[in-house]
Amino acid sequence: MLRLLVIDDHAMVREGLLQILRKLGPNIVQYDAQDAESALLLLETEKEFDLVLLDIMLPGTNGLSLLGILRKRFPAVPVVVLSALDDLDTVNRAMRLGAAGYVTKSGDGDTLLEALRRVLEGEIYLPPHLHDKLSVSLSSGLGRTRTQADRHGLTEGQRRVAELLREGKSNREIGDLLGLTEGTVKVHVSKIFRKMGVVSRAEAIALFQRQRGKL
Image (cartoon, rainbow, N blue to C red; front, side, top):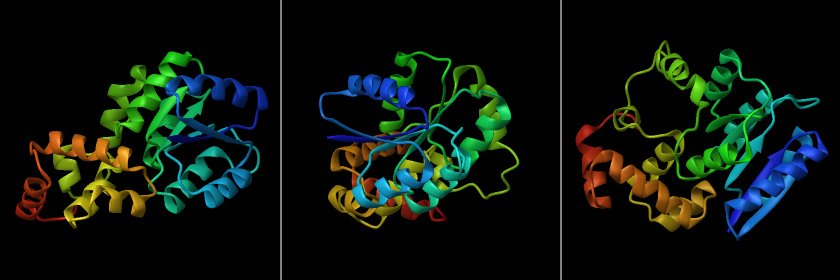
């Protein structure tokens, strides 16, 4: 079962998005919220969401501010920004705040679905026309030491799973700790193994130990 939350202040937009999201699969549970307050209430009470789709042009607490709050309070839930804005500065800021993807409203439903599928698989989605510029921008000037996650090209979601994997946690335990379904954890673990060039948990843990350093 896939649990999705759409945050947008326009009722018609929310209804249209919910119709599109049904194409992700048969077992979809959808929620919607019109502002930051109602979204946070849903996240607190419903707990286990697989993905949040967020418009950054919200009344009151704007979407970028809400994005920062979501990453701190619900770090295991990937957030995809959906916005009419597609300038480099806005997209860059959203990605630096921890968005797992950015989709412009000028795109079509198929583009949105492709972005969400990739994010649900543990990848990061960037607008094709800004991908090269954003890749350079996000990788430069960050002033941080190269970590194991950087070395293997792990996404933020994969890094969180890898941290618990390194501690010897099972898929079910990782799912419980991060608020993910066991199926989602399995997808993350599979991609982590492929990126690290290993085929088992034992090999992954051994490689983490050999490389040492921060994950």
